[in-house]
Length: 186
Image (cartoon, rainbow, N blue to C red; front, side, top):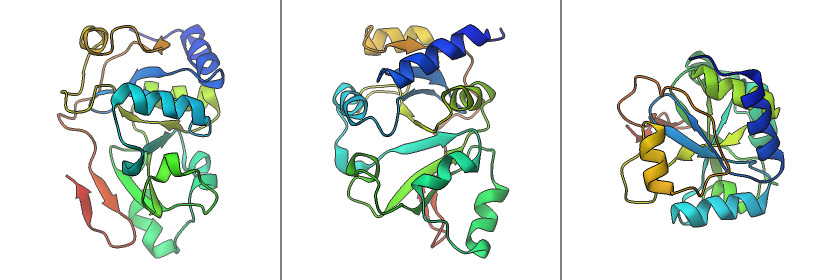
């Protein structure tokens, strides 16, 4: 089922009003908001029961959306990063120094991904911004892969749901440190 452009405009409207948006990603439904809206991020963290110290992932429709959030490493370090995008690969890159703590947590890096999911990419494009992307579930609960599970777990606490199918990955995307090459989550 194709998503109507109206749905993307509505989702973008909620994004700019500080709302929480649920949307399909490569593996699970994601929960996101405007990464620079502190109230929206605090609402998301409270809903998920997620500690701020963990930091958050940003997804984007292209790397240019992520550039203001990172310090871009040398070209040889960026080569495997850029070669994996768009795709289901999340990378830790050095965080821009002015980023709020709610994005980086206790870290000097930030997790970023240029999403391969067509609907998630269209959402980032419609918002003209990267989005917070965390699994749409309460901490300790199973990530959700459809809107029924989303409704059951988050019980109407999301401002807008962008309906669509999740990708074929069975687990959330792997996270890799671009500076060391080490896998943080497989």
